[in-house]
Image (cartoon, rainbow, N blue to C red; front, side, top):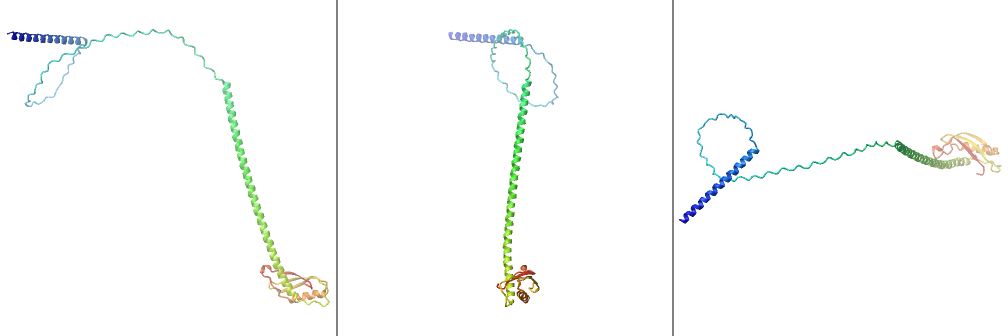
Length: 272
């Protein structure tokens, strides 16, 4: 009996505690609702009519949906206490206006200094221009001197070459004249030798006088004229030599046609 009374007392205490807890929670919920509704007024309701197209009714048998399990009511969250109003910062005390310094007038440019600098710049440019002109004139003068030197060298070289050519031609002419003179002397000796072989000296011939004759001949060596150019002083000797010249025709011909001479000057002495 005591056990039953103790159990009934404990169950009654549980029920009382549960009822008190529910009452406290309901009171707290009501406080929250009242507090929120007081701070946030309800917005005005707007009525909106929605027209939906007629849906044909079809007889469909919907399967019974399972009902979600009933959850136990969660305890309402404890609202945070409202923040205390922030204290406004103290307003700064306006400072007294500072005196505005007077604007100093801009410094006037030093016109004389600028003019002096401009004059110096002009003088510098003029000096550079004169130096450039001087260098250009010196360059042209040097090129002119070099050109004149090259021209003088070319003229001297040409003069030396011409002189060498003249000397060579002169030497060649001298050698040619010497050879021609030698060949001519040989030709004259051959002619004189043939004529001397036909000279008959007079018996009373004394001394060794010289007689000179001018002979005209043809290219074939035939004599066409004989003239006494210089007498030996002995008429008999002159006539003997003249007869020997005419008797010696035709005279010997030179070795080359270039050596032929139409007029011959022949000298004779008795003792040669």
